[in-house]
Image 1 (cartoon, rainbow, N blue to C red):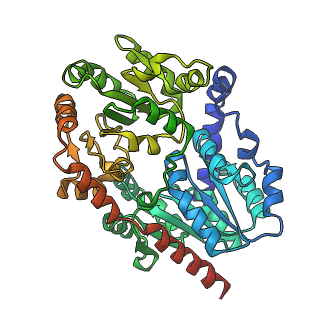
Image 2 (cartoon, rainbow, N blue to C red):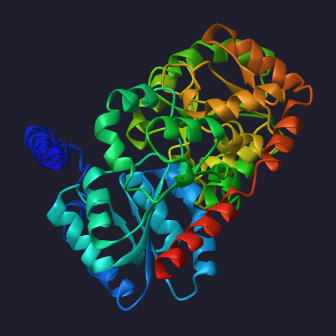
Length: 431
């Protein structure tokens, strides 16, 4: 009965949202990509690549999850020679990066969570294991996987401060669904404890660490190489994953910051692609600013313009480059933390020995950030203290960057532990 109600509400929601959805497709082109696949049309190239092969299906929602899963995909392929690891995403940005990293033929959009659509994909893929990253659980997918005997594993499992109370209020509904998951491979002890409180049996929860510590960073990407050339001889502040509402803090503090550190170039990366133009517009009111994509185009001219060597502010409006750009930084700020969005991953910068600053909203990575605070490997500030903290660290990081790098190196290895557990799960199914 619960699944009937869920399916009815999902269908009703789609009907209600469809005018807006169609309007967005018509006016901005968003949501067009992969529409057929979401509605159950399994891509022909996907059918061809899995035909006659044993398959593992990995689902990664967006860019961050795709990058975290990249090494997992490679190591699963090495552990299971001859198998196909197929990858689905939810967002268009995640799809773009997944296609770049894994090849378009085995990457597809997650189908809508209706029985007849999910069944078409399960019949086409015939996966022997479904791996979903972090906290992405779709009820119908779980039910249909159980129906055909496909085990489900949640890798990098986490339960955030914000989602935990909601799960507990709906424990009676979520409990039966969580029991359909064969194993949760948790990022840390706190998430593991919360999963057990939500009704998951202790034997189905393991703590393996965070796969994002093992993320592969490609510093040879063309945009990273261009920016490295541009900032040679200058100090660099990288502001990563900025969300709506945070630009105002930086717009207000940058003038004073540049008075004290005039040689610094600021590379600012909005979190969401749809906000690239908007963010550039905010900073054009009073600052010399250029989008990185325009710089790339200009750099290919026969006589590249000289402004490329003197810009104070660059908007990084490309996908998949931020992880490498952090390696150019003298100081990094991690966005989504000055407003109540829960923050993003500080280790993307700390791995390079870069001192890291975050705002006070970091509940999405609370275990990680609290451990970094104990190691004096991160600085937490409010909006009022932002400029002073950045200026001070730009002068002298007091060893914070090195402590961050050492912290990062002490946390790696989760991917290997995940692969071992997943192969064990497949082997147990065969036995």
